[in-house]
Length: 297
Image 1 (cartoon, rainbow, N blue to C red):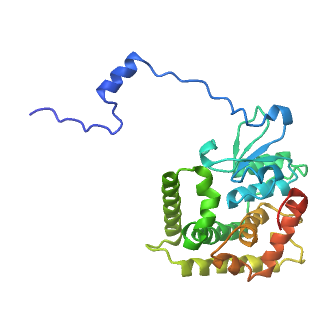
Image 2: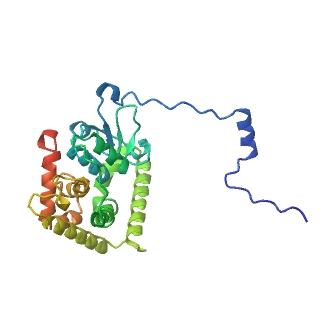
Image 3: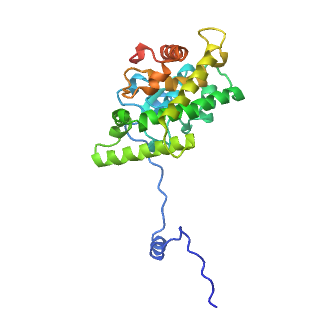
């Protein structure tokens, strides 16, 4: 019997291409320098946080329109870190996601998450060591990461009435080509729908359920803050705002900002049912993004 042939790997290089590479071996080129328009850290020594924002808002330090970016932008501010912000995209990020911080050289870019939190703690004037979140804190953080985030995804990406807002923030800045814009809109909405279905463990998108769960999450957060010792307390009775406060603010600021551009106001209106969260947003807005920074409040 003839020998049994081994199945061909998907990654097997075709013979003509293999011969070409033997003749012209692959050369690894040195890493490109930053574009000329990129600011020099050597000149300023100021860290730069790369976020979703507009070229007009970046020089004024206005809040990013992306919750993940705004969370870290706010955390750097409440930690008294001097920094600049620059418009960027996921494609420009070393990790493939925004935000990321470019500290002065020779340090390499720092992605969001534990590494950025540690860097902030080491460079903040307070020099506070990051503490591991308690199980109670993790429970409330999960409300933000699941129920609130899912409602945000539905409101921005899947609500037809908010399509103009989505286009203004993410689609139109990416390209002037109508076909590219149409393709990109389909891609981001499909990705958001997949995230929503995964989070809700459902075969179909159920807006009523999504917003009911968001209301329950806001109610739990409101009760938590309302139960603190003083009216001006921060979450978990902290002496000053923490990363968790910044996480909450990242959603409440964008949902309650009158100039943001919500046309379907279902989620913003649900949030307004909880005055404690509204006041929390106003306090952090005044603390981190005053009128002097050019923020429209």
